[in-house]
Image (tube, rainbow, N blue to C red; front, side):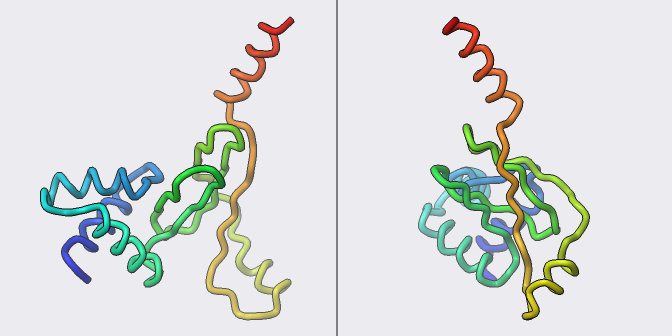
Length: 128
């Protein structure tokens, strides 16, 4: 693993947020002024393929990267905000239903976040 890959893994594992490649690039640039964005994308691809990080895709938004600790996500359908949630581990139940060996699962629950609900309600009151 390269020095940059180690730094990127550290950035992701230490973050409480779901970081995009661009956000990771800006944080990595603090440690290595010469780094380029392509290096970040290449290392993210490597770390993901090696199973060291998770990639969270939300339609209409840039991919975000997350630590491998088992947890699930709430995804706001309006603004794309990602929120970590911890549900009972569903691995055993899913495995029984599949009948084939499973490596992992990624559960994303779509909802409308409180901020967007407030905007929707205030917008409907203004139209009346």
